[in-house]
Amino acid sequence: DAKTTQPTSMDCAEGRAANLPCNHSTISGNEYVYWYRQIHSQGPQYIIHGLKNNETNEMASLIITEDRKSSTLILPHATLRDTAVYYCIVRDSSYKLIFGSGTRLLVRP
Amino acid sequence: ETGVTQSPTHLIKTRGQQVTLRCSSQSGHNTVSWYQQALGQGPQFIFQYYREEENGRGNFPPRFSGLQFPNYSSELNVNALELDDSALYLCASSSALAGASTDTQYFGPGTRLTVL
Image (cartoon, rainbow over all chains, first blue to last red; front, side, top):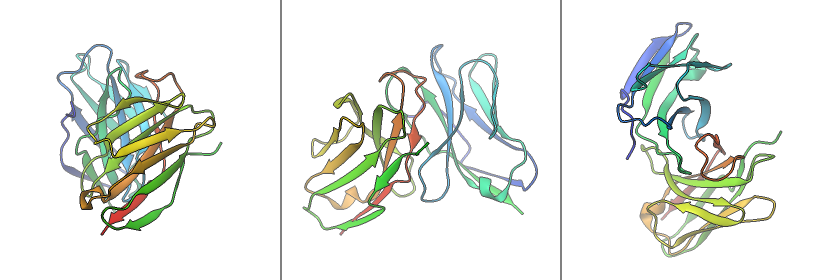
């Protein structure tokens, strides 16, 4: 089973920041937090991952709380093309990704 | 750099038939994982191949099998197709040693299989 809890859906206005929360209260010390997104009928797209520290790349920022029990994915300036299902995944040392139901983000014009 | 590619894009089969789906890994990647995504659900892990051997398997019956070739491309074979096998089949490739938690998996566009 997925080790994360995410809201079913969210929306934000185009041009504003989208903040997607994820709870992972049972995360272990060596487990990473990964974020993927899936635009309708396409393969999941890797966004970002982190262990303890906050991370930023050209797509997004990942903020992980100090106790590591939750995290937030931030899309700084959401566009209509960011409308997608966003998956937060806690990755242990195994080979597989365990996807939950994700958050359906709708970016409004 | 070429990304992960999959073929065919779409496929229609009937119950009881067999199907083979193909995946070419991203340049420099040596590990391939397969996932099944039913409509409205998140992807579910089927199995992973590393060095031409199955490295791990999810909760799927033996009629789901695979191969990895020396060039790291891979096939997913499904025998005795059932209606519930209708899904998007996703392939993901990665480059680290199998089992490493930091080997980021990059997905292909998927193959949409419909079983009638």
